Picture 1 (tube, rainbow over the protein chains, first blue to last red):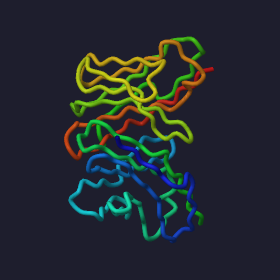
Picture 2 (cartoon, rainbow over the protein chains, first blue to last red):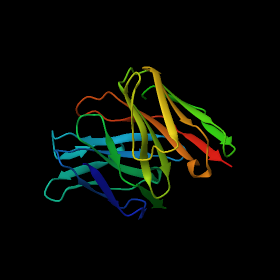
Picture 3 (cartoon, rainbow over the protein chains, first blue to last red):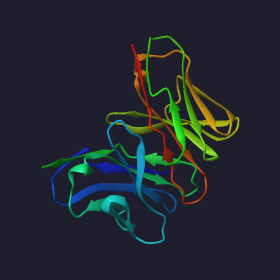
Length: 113
Length: 113
């Protein structure tokens, strides 16, 4: 069975500061991991995905995530926060079949000017 | 953007009335999903479909039914709406292939009064 845990339901950072959103996964098979972003009143958009090709994955809008098997983690980072990064972020895991996706409870990112 | 259209986008209904939400896709993807999003719970799977007339339950299926008579359409029905079903409902699609992600619609905000 697969599951993800997102540590911190709310994260606040100053504009220009490092963004770090945490995600730990549990999977009985090699996982495929995803980060999605949700802006207010919109659906979820894919930020990036890990599919075993490389442990450091670069996504859109300057975000990246590193897969660490020993820590069962897939944390999302961005070197310098921008006001437009304020949104809800979801980590998700799939067994790789493309059939089932399991989502974390989300982290709301606030960027302080 | 993936071609996913949800209708209606907003609906207010009375307790005990039936409600049907529609998801239409133009991507010819095999898998379609209905999720509900509630604060503190993230996204929870209600039902999903893996082909025409092939559906299965998710983790929060009680009180909901689905139908898929065509590849492009996936309907979610609340037979007798309750206040606990007030939520934002998202449709998602996936090709069901290895390493593929899910694509989301814009959501339907349902209020049961």
